[in-house]
Image 1: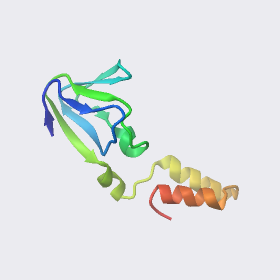
Image 2: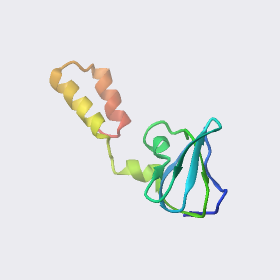
Image 3: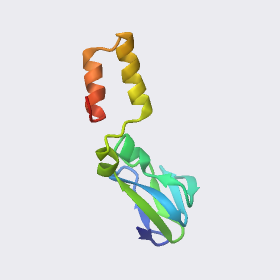
Image 4: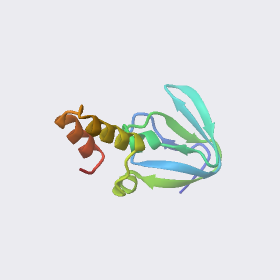
Length: 114
């Protein structure tokens, strides 16, 4: 995917269905009207919306012509990927016998497997 300078790539508060890796070019990240960072080749943005909240936490605008690699939310989760902390938390809780039945079920449903 390519975008021209000045093009808005993510809008704070919108639902996010993709995360992006910057192949070339630069973008500016801002939230609540404050500039937070300038990102370039090799940097990633949009991951919070895909991996956690679903809501864009910042606005991202191209500051030069930019080439991006998009990873769609459905493709990331289709592989039944789970963060290592989630696997560790559920496994540790089960071993210690302290997890409630409800808590284990919630964690399993949230990350797509039983």
